[in-house]
Length: 523
Image (cartoon, rainbow, N blue to C red; front, side, top):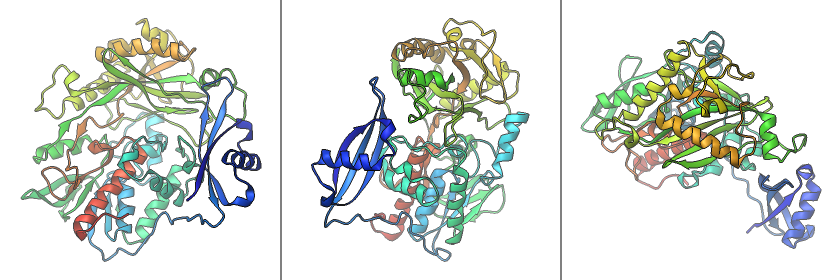
């Protein structure tokens, strides 16, 4: 059995392997002759004290032990194998397809958007021309929302499945091995497209299929069993097993399910603003003034506070990042953030959002599955209206927002379509604005310098998670009243990021394999 040991070193020593080995051997009370192999298993920055440290977990294999390296992904020819439909080519859908190949099933992916490269033209149109393609944008298209909105791979969902396997698959398809080590792994929007392309090519080489510009428009259910799917209003395609991995912004899917009598429910979500600071300012705060240290990455932060009985917290924090326009319809505005792999832009941005339960809303009804979705849609449209009915967003300096006065000017912002000065207190519902005002004051005490008029609030940050839950059986993962339908990933309400969505895709296919083989899921 391998031996684990924890050591702390100065950041300047992070590339000195001889020093790391010597220090960790000393801590483990071992000598070099005692070990057969070693590696850095985990790495994280500890900036809680003025003297910043790098915490390392080192793993040793002793003499006589062998370090076994598992093959992350094992392909096989599935051309003549049983077929399953996968609706959506985000992380849940792609990982479902890869897992299907491992399990001896033929995956057929239908994606409403374009392939990962072709999406770029539509993203450019949003940024430069403020034109939204409702089928191809930051949310829809191969790779899903995470491909062009950051690619963070951190998840707290350890209980949901094999996080390491999910990360190893990313490395297998071209991601840097550092993601296996870092406490908060990140690939970067500039590198993800090549990885997504490699995954698609593997699916095709194994005999799977991937169809773009193929939007789910209907489903056929007979005797509570799914029978077929319809794409683009064309002839039915028969399937008895369908993985529904359409993402949290595919609102038309929620309406379709409701029309077909498929049970859905309102679900808790979060909404707020995306806040942008100068990255140097966040470095100054988090690194205790050590802003010139070349061995430290751009600093991040994580904030959470209970305000008037509701959680207010940071979401998708992007060091060295950019704020992006993530609307999926022309008559709405939505913000999100992303970072390139080097995180070398001069801005830091993060969502600061308020947790909202369905019962918190004034028009709540147990019978209305769309109460949270309608609330979300109204805020996005209201922000579009006040910002001039373009993809510009209403914005306000942080202190001005707390004092409820419009900002007279703005520092440069990374949001390319531009900003419009608005008192966000007049457009955001009070359930959100009141708690944000209080939270910023608290955060300013937690992080000295965070509460500043150098920070600009962009509204809204509204697509943190799905406002609708598609309920499923806890054991079979099938929908509670439709056999063969597997609600999956963020859009179904069972994930909150790339890795948790990928894991859910694996879990859903394992459930199908188990059902078809009357055996246990793959190990």
